Image 1 (cartoon, rainbow, N blue to C red):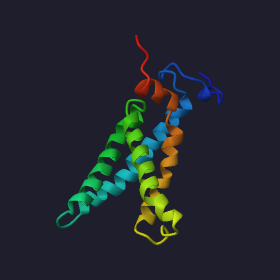
Image 2 (cartoon, rainbow, N blue to C red):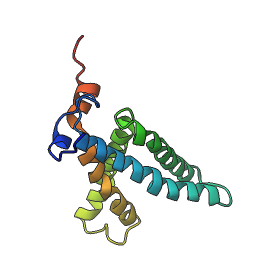
Image 3 (spheres, rainbow, N blue to C red):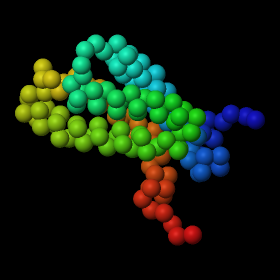
Amino acid sequence: MTLSLKAIFQPGVQYEGVRPIHIYLLRLVYILMFFVLGKGTWTHILTHRGSWEPRDAMAWCVWAAFATLAGLGIFRPLKMLPILLLEIFYKVLWLIVVAYPLWSTGKLAGSPAEGTTSAFLWVILPIIAVPWGYVFVTYIYKPAR
């Protein structure tokens, strides 16, 4: 078996016509979510002292669930696409609804939203990794059989 740079950009039979480059990028995103997000969220949850503020706890639990489910995505990248789609949707929505108005009025720098904005700008990586043609055919347009 020879490894060809050209071959990673050609639609593959093994992954329902998705290019291998997308599979590699998806796995990279899942690995980052599992290890980076997972370490931060599970450490925060397991070392938390005292009572939780309910909304804060909900956010930490959702992110821990995302990170944990991303572990499945490493091995089944296409089957776990819905968690990436949800991640892309909520981050882009937050950037539009919260960050952009603050930025456009010059109030983002130094605000409580600045740190979250910096973290959420990394949403570009899953946007690039997602095989959008596959998403369209699989989740939006399902041809009649």
